[in-house]
Image 1 (cartoon, rainbow, N blue to C red):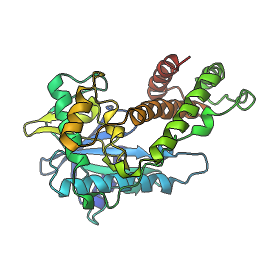
Image 2 (tube, helix red, strand yellow; image 1 turned 60 degrees about the vertical axis):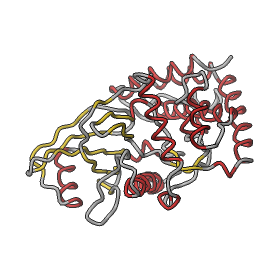
Image 3 (cartoon, rainbow, N blue to C red; image 1 turned 180 degrees about the vertical axis):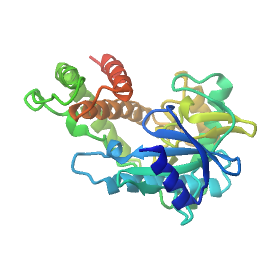
Length: 322
């Protein structure tokens, strides 16, 4: 999407008079710009390629847009309920959290947040981890009205069908530089992947027996989606919001010694369930593997996105259980 096209959208939909615009190659999965308006205010713009958010080959872009809209609308409702730690979109002139652009993209406008940013990986300190836990507790305990537009977690692994392909199905992969290496990687690890899918299915069955545990979840409260501002910790990237068991936000938050899980139980009265923690740990890997295998099955150029996706895919495959 060109800078010029984005400037037009910002003017038409938000009434923003843009003085300067700069693309920022940060994060992963979306595309970002920093914008300066004619009044001297900075803004942060996120553009999502809806094709990358489809869950199956036959799905329409409108379904991906609907999921993204529901998540971002929910973030706006949570912020408006008084949760100052939610960095939610600025509504359009029509009150929407995002808009279509070029029949392919979803565009959202955010306040520019001053503060310390972090990368994917380990938390910077125990205080960082505990600060994020406090935000998760507040989100899970928030007013029910704020989740009125939130969608429920259906435990779908997007592009799961790609993980279930056989060697006969993938002999035709030749759509880019990573197509053949990816197809070979999938064939070599077919049995391990299928065993992991089977374990995941068993855990989903168990999760469906506990419908009363559902809360509003962020989905990815990892360090890269946190910032430390003068007002305290905040959570960014709310495009994965769903109604789900609390373990969806907890599996990656605990350092492995149970301390965060115990603190969550003390704060909420809900004890995290080990099978559900395992469910979300497994789904994270399955979802990423399916996404990247699907990416390399389709036409691709070998650009920086593809290179990073390939590196992550190799890491995921290396840690598959034997």
